[in-house]
Length: 313
Image (cartoon, rainbow, N blue to C red; front, side):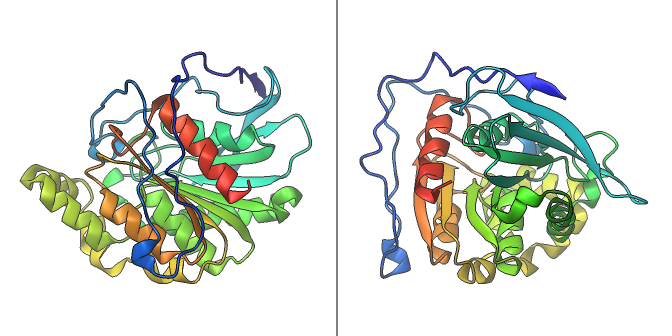
């Protein structure tokens, strides 16, 4: 078990405007979304393909976003699954009393320690949540986790469900449960929450709303993006059109927040808006200018904090 430095960033931008944020429930789904723009004096672009195109970004150091002082987070690793391929789960918890458990689900070719996942973990831990961040199978970011070409949306859901069952059995504080996911992980948490009414809130980052939408985005990128999918994950390609998060989202009564990159080509803004619009209790939506599929930097940290505020986390 180790302690982690949670000192706040010194490079927070001087100007972040949340005044255009859209929160609350509207009468018509098409009226529920009004893009929230975090107005910065400067921002950086990065490669849109990120982890999902095999360019794996992992973080050895975290970007702190919580409110706890230095040294007030503990971290260790548990392994889920006896008698089967174990799933390594990074556990982060505050020294202060724990308010609940937040399960974080990464996307295809991601990991619990991917650079875009660490700020999510820190945001929850800084508010008193115990964070469980698994490294799910079939990821290029986790050597030995299984052949990446065997990744499918259904397997990702089932592996996340396996970790959730472990959380429920091993962690009494899981009476309060938050679910957060990035990309395919956001698809997975919608499926989990639809079957688990005890989930208190959901945070979706760059969410996959359906396999059909994901395939359409790949086609819009061009032949190389489609070829990567067909050669890199043939089983995923074969099942894509059978997966749709909308029916699951429509059954979720817990509040839902969505954060996405305005320039995301893998799960475009239209897909993120559809994810948000499908959830009856959606409370927060933000599209970040200049950000792509794997958001980063102070504007991302600020968006996560605003989303958790809206969720009451």
